[in-house]
Image (cartoon, rainbow, N blue to C red):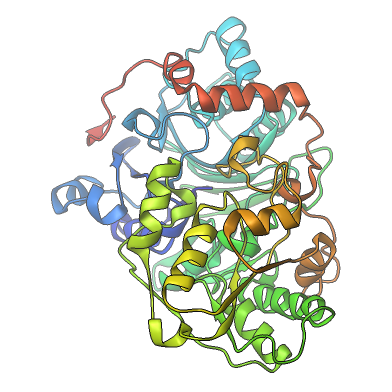
Amino acid sequence: MCGVVGVFGLTPVNQVLYDSLLLLQHRGQDAAGIATGHNNAFSMFKGNGLVRDVFRTRNMRQLMGPIGIGHVRYPTAGSAASQDEAQPFYVNAPYGIVLAHNGNLTNSERLKAELFKNDRRHINTSSDSEVLLNVLAHELQNCAPGYSLEPASVFKAIAGLHERARGAYACVAQIAGYGLLAFRDPHGIRPLVLGKNETDQGTEYMFASESVALAGSGFQFVRDIQPGEAVFVDMDGTLYAQQCAKKFSLNPCIFEYVYLARPDSVMDGVPVYEARVKMGEYLAAQIKNTLVVGEIDVVMPIPDSSRPAALELANRLNVPYREGFIKNRYIGRTFIMPGQAVRKKSVRQKLNAIAVEFAGKNVLLVDDSIVRGTTSREIVQMAREAGAKRVVFASAAPPVRYPNVYGIDMPTRDELIASNRTDEEICREIGADALYYQSIEDMKKAVSDLRHDLTQFDASCFDGQYITGDITPEYLDKLEYAKQHPEVNEAGGLQMNLGYSSNQ
């Protein structure tokens, strides 16, 4: 899970890129980067940390140009600590290209070997995003050997990339002297949207991971980029679009609707907030079957992403809704923090219980999901320490039982509390008196109710069905080993001097 943005403007775009990355900060807090183009050259600055901490005024002044891309990173493949993995990535042959990628390739190791052996391209980091960039560069070289790049050649190159790459990828790229490119994998796993801004000088375009980045930057939402589609804006501002995949279907990651996306975004025609309200509706219907009237005094959300579901659940159960936890907004999202110890410590720093709301009450706590169980266990304990008489826990999502390989950091089965436990065992593990989970069917219906023709999803972390068809038990074992032995991953890359501003 990362955030990407690309802007074709008529004036310098450094500020709008920065502002858009702030709006996408929830999608990645590990690193940030911006690359802009001017006079067939790139300026780039990137480094570890939040957007507001990475960029200074002196950096922004060097990021001139009317076209650019930006990225906020949440590590899934590669090193969480190294600046080497910060995006965008850059290559200079056959064209100067910068690329930012949201998702995760499932065949990056094979592609890396092919690039070295057949394409004569060397990968400097362990990032699959750099692999994807070099595949794109190679395909462009094959499609336009005379170094005269037309939109048809760009689309042919993306078709070649689709044939080679597997997994999830929503990308923005800039080709020096030619234009801005956006494309999405044939399964449409990760989101990507198109917006425009009409000015007196002409039309400006923006591509972004979420519609909230468009609205907050003054751009009007046009549409979602379709699975397998590529959209190219040339230097004259003419927009071209073409389906580049032989086979394609829309299978958005359902965890975007559960947790990852901002509630004010609209993804593939579905308002995220409304989807979460629907999840509360379906969860309430399930709980009604077993809940004794008067057994629960109050319903409380775990802020922030569970609020829509919790409020709807409280209304459906006719139980008072109360805010029992205050959130420190200066602590990052614990789900995406690296390391179990860091996450556990951050729960207490992030949330504080309002004792008067818990004292002597039977409380129903609602969270968007339970992944590792660290947060849930600490929250239940906090509720008891605040005086709760009975603590019931409800998850708006089903049990997370399987690794995610398409861009969410839960690759090891040992980290998933539901991997080898029954619901009763999970309840005991988190210390609750009772536990309710959303069913997989109801979670999917909560989204498809809002767009009836959207019936297929990537729900692999819940049902173990990997839609790319290339995930084997051996692959998951290898992924788990790499996660548990990060030094193996680190050894694969060479050190690069990133976190700098340079005119390429």
